[in-house]
Image (cartoon, rainbow, N blue to C red):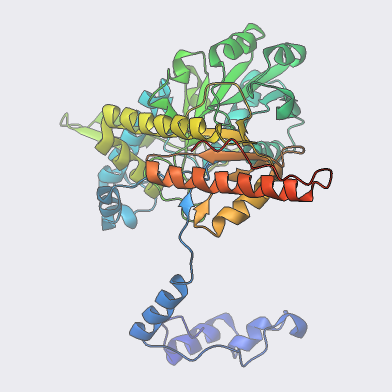
Length: 473
């Protein structure tokens, strides 16, 4: 109550209107044991400059880390122009553009976002955005189940495991049958979908195959062959695509994909603490009435001038009601605006150059890492900005050790997969300089030397200490 800007008279009038004498009367149904006891143990109030100094002091305790972690969220650079434009009040404070006559700017930005996504994915239509890549993937599966009226969902083992969890959560109550191909990634030397294993589970009851490009391990899947197999049985091909990689590779829409979804965070949105994010959802024109969420269309007014309006809103709040294809009731407008500004600033050639920088840095690092004794690339497949490294000891130990040196070395795959505790997923964006990459290599090399020294010192079968070898860097 003290934080609500009402006078004592305002509060008295409100309490009288609802028929109680005091605010405490509103809490009588809350057990005493569940109530916070006053007075609260809070620090005294601070003035604005004192509060700023306090927060600055707390911020100074943070340890800056050079980030080599990826796994779905990436440390890309956000141009200052993106932050400046999205901070404009017409974007920052805009909510839902229901009234087209007063929301033309917001509607135009959404339309341009959709256009950019269609060009990147090679698809014909895209919606106004989704909550994140995971929810977009889940909505794609729901679309396939509704369209085909089938129950079987085939999931590539290389799909982000967090996405798989979200898909299964969405599908509760749909009696969907999930078939995970290559559930144990280390059983495959390639790290991509085993097409023979796919043949064993695919049949006429299959609604869709969902696969990512690149996959969770940074590797490129054979989209065309997988699409041909699922189309042969009348199912749908869903691709979870990375927007930065899409600037460099053949779009999934030209390789047989029916739906392309993904996470738009790399497009000018800060990593923060893992959010907010923005998902994109693109499909073929024949599926437009199954598209979740909202879609902005471009038309002309009575005077022949171009105008924008919400159209084909299949959600339950609008005309579809109980026949809605999705319960998604909004879009990530501000994040989608940031992504739109980012893509507009870089353009087709700028996005391609950005993608190439990531590719170059990843391949430079991979060559160096393989020169260190005990380290090797886990999978023998083409990769983009991310790859898996087999380490001589648990990845969690390496990450913890390098964090003390100001380096976030990557993601421990043991968190997600049994038997992959020694596998480290490392990502390289355009922000990682060659000097920073060399520092990572040096730290891994010293760790390998230390491990080798520890092993030789523990060897009691010989009095001769063997000097560790193999660190060429």
